[in-house]
Structure formats: C-alpha cells, structure tokens
Image 1 (cartoon, rainbow, N blue to C red):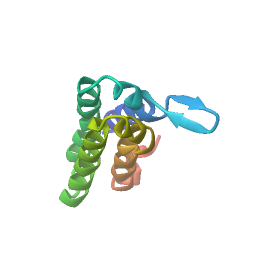
Image 2 (image 1 turned 90 degrees about the vertical axis):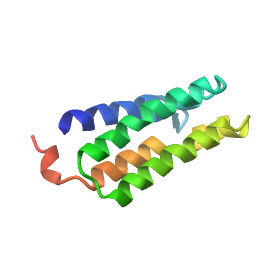
Image 3 (image 1 turned 180 degrees about the vertical axis):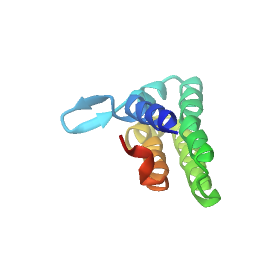
Length: 112
C-alpha cells in the first residue's frame, strides 16, 4: 500500500501543486483543461488512480463515494468553457481525495 500512497502523492503534486506563482500553487490539471474535452478526460483518468488506491486500502463505501464525487465535480466543472478553466485552478479534487485516503489509513502504514 505504501507504493500506492507514493504514486498518489506524486499525482497530486503533478496535477495540482507542481508550479508556483507568488503564493498560488497549481499543476497540470488546469493546463490540461485548456485542451477541450481531451484534457479533462486525461485528468479524470489520472485522478481515478487515487480512487483505486482508496478501494485497495479498503476505505468505507461512503469515503469511496465522496472521492468519486470529487472527481466527477472536477470533470463537470472542467468541461464548462472559461469558468471550468478557472475552476480547475481552484477546485483541487485530487488533494481532497488524498486527504481522505490518508486520514482513513492506519498510521502504521507510514512508519519507517
């Protein structure tokens, strides 16, 4: 499971936190969103890895549903012209999902 957590952390950094302008952090997700349809679809596919990690970790169904809902909201917002591109900079579904994943996994997983 540690491998999945590390990959999820990498994806969150890549998609939502990789770049910084002043105190504002963003990643590839809003940039991918500039490519109509395809960019948002690619972001959706990458985001499902964190959901997969939650399923593999045995998170409760309610948490899995919340994670899925975060991804769907991100996809729907991203599909809206102009507003969606701005929304991708603000709504960080992958960060939320990583927080859900980490907060529901036994702390012994992160030792060592």
